[in-house]
Length: 386
Length: 118
Image (cartoon, rainbow over all chains, first blue to last red; front, side):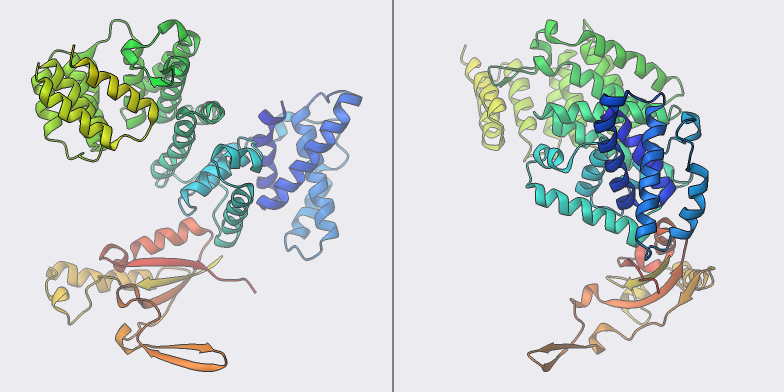
């Protein structure tokens, strides 16, 4: 309950106070009072309105004490409108300003690691300590990062608003990149971050129902996360087609499919929608490899990414076009990328060129960092001898 | 909000150089026109162009002694070429103005610095 309300309460307070730090302190106070009082006196009828009003009152009291803050006059006038209404709180009177907050946290004038930390703190309601732990940095480092980001927002005049139309595509891209980065940090092992990213994605989809890319990202995260339990076995990576489907979260995959329909309806063809469509096709049985190869081709065109071309080659191979796939792989400028050599090894093996395949796996093994993937590659290489 | 926009010339061709002569006539006409448009944008207080970084002297004080060195504080390539002031509602507006400054697209960069109030 507290975690769910944190972002909305904080956003509303920043909108009202125009000051991130003051809003955060006031929100913290209000949540602390609620934690102490609600179990004793019962939860108020409108918990959110109660929290916002209590925090506002606290902030105004603080401003009264601290006469140096320039905004005080405006706030003291506003005080009259929020006072003495605790018995008659109306949830609808509190605007949902999470979207403004999201765009502020993901402003490109902030460093990417600061955008990520700030988004998790402000909208996710994670504590500084939790964020520090998730990103494996000391708490003091994370605290400094958050303080610097908030100082820059204030000093540099980063606006608290949803960007106007001519800036929106770029800014939306930044927001989605932050959420997806959080997801991928979690996908790499720290599951709580993946869940957090999905929560943020759900909120973004609710707040921007007409943006296909937002639904695309949510689908992508839901479907990939649904396969989490099946991705590793005994510390070794399990290829998608060899995964135990009974370990997949079927309900979450269905939800992903439903979200994707909303993304496709307005005619979206951006990178997240394409990746989402690919993720959904991957879990279909039997897999439509020609269709997948076509989607990877479209995604490669949109993103210009050689890594996507590599995936296209893999899909082509599965569709039976192994020679074509190998020719494609040999044209890619990805020599430092172990997946390129792993894919070459796989293709060469299928073409019966075991010696060449071994050399490719050797190169992949030189470049790979993760132990789970190293074990997988070593096993594939050994299977060439059978 | 008041901002100072510091114009770092970087690789930007300056009139009189071979790089400048290599620009198309169209571009040669556009650059001063763009600067003029920037300077007449509401909220902008134009600064003055600086002489080239080679003419700079850098002053530092160590243990009470004034140390002067020839040249700009940073490497010549990144040196400041000009500046202007801009009164704007928020950082987004300042970034949009900065993006219109020709040096930003010609190999240089613009640093946007908020000025302290009061």
